[in-house]
Length: 442
Image 1 (spheres, one colour):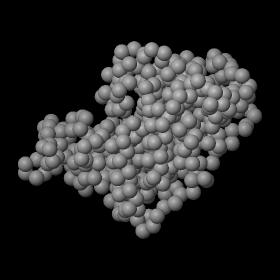
Image 2 (cartoon, helix red, strand yellow):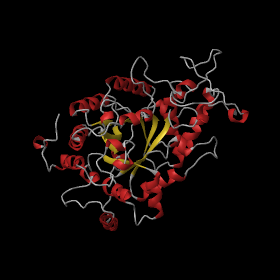
Image 3 (cartoon, helix red, strand yellow):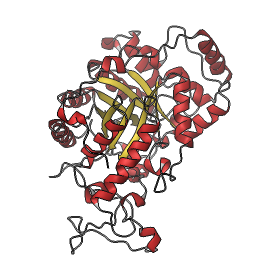
Image 4 (cartoon, one colour):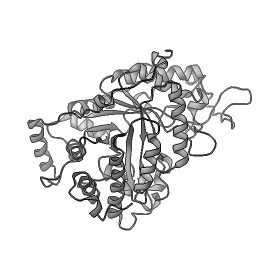
């Protein structure tokens, strides 16, 4: 197992101005081909004075989107005739992140060096490189979508046991061994948990393989995802990572990622940072502790799964102001705005709660309220653009969104722009002054 890297002896100050350099897209042949494709696939031609998102916000921050394996696979088969969704991505965005293709269960479902499935991840990276996109990797260490073998005792499968051992409140069995029946408190793990040393080695090897494979290509990594407690007395929630390794699993993950690619931006990513003051306090406590140890955490990822009921501009402004005290760039990583009645009080990104969050049909006046909320968010992002460096939508359009019933994105299921798109464009292009736009409510 690799030991601590030399960064522990110094503060790391990446050159963010270089890292955030916008790629040059002024290639006439590419633009001509893309224009023809957009017309052929039925994406509405917009007036000449209306910019794409990436052009409108150039000089402010990257505007990105999460894409799936179907899109990248189809594009690679015939790049000269991209699907309607792919054409929209190329028209509107300059940054991409995969929805699932780099999560542990997708890229390494089986133990060992021969347990990797690289196809979908390679397709994603190839799509980004071919189209000069700023590429983000999601995610290296998470309690969900991680195979049970990562936390199981070595050779458990060979013994053929199906024993499930539930931990007590402290995560330990009465004999003192660390045993568990939960995958991060959400799934089942069969049999005794592995030792700290075993899980650390698996984490190290996985990060070294994945980050190393895409070194210099993927510019940003979500190293640790959703480790914070929602409230109460604990900063971190109980998970199979804390049960096997302990709370320093976060520092170790960043250490291993930095060793694998010293030039990559490494970020911590979580949800409800916009809407929960207690979770922001936990974030600040955790990050300051990591900074005191010189752990190479380089950015904060705020998912921003919110609703048409809020946060207001003032609330988002306050959340960003508090996160800025950490002195790190802020990336808006998984943004969508839920319009379903069932999701107006619950903005959790917990997959298990998603069905309830998209029930009840759309709220009244959903499209107008969607435009208001996106305007509020982007007003706040622009106010804090000194720190906000990336803004990423979680899905290309409503049809492929994980919250499709809530119609949460700027484009409908046919890739047509909604009123929210126009509001976001006009906000930055100055076509409608902030003080005169009835959409822009505090």
